[in-house]
Length: 236
Image (cartoon, rainbow, N blue to C red):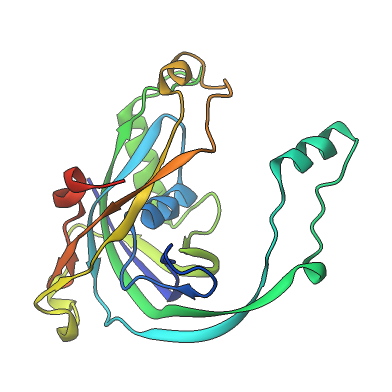
């Protein structure tokens, strides 16, 4: 079991029901926190599981306009460029659009999580849960990461993260006291990977781009969301 504190100036956990303008959830989604942890350390052999999210700072929104691109680089174009018979270039000036975003500001979260072994192993010796636990603990303690973690969107970088033994719940803002129904929120994406084939050949191309959205309906009590309590109630 690991516990960390994460702080950032801004965060954006996009609601999927908003079509054009980006609007953030009031609190982080478990999948966003899993992605943040993968930025610190990740291997196919492990899977992060979020158990608890603690919101310390008051929920404040901020609206801004950002330049975004309306297109994306297609996988087929990347394959063509790798073969030398096409281009995967994307020109931002040709597909730039200005959109309004409603984001969170001055955020501070406590994340309690653990990891599970997926059964997907490489040829490296000594792939055990103890080995990975030591790596994660060392990286959290030293502030190391593979790529710098972000809060939902890449441009909203984490200001700092550090491990703690216990969360100081007395520092939760007074505005978060009591119970709050957060409504239906995105829990994560369930990818249709062929796990059984990956267990025997982790280099095999059995990772799928297809996924089902999984939702849950949490309640926040005094700033604390017990994610593990709602895990069995997730709905597609």
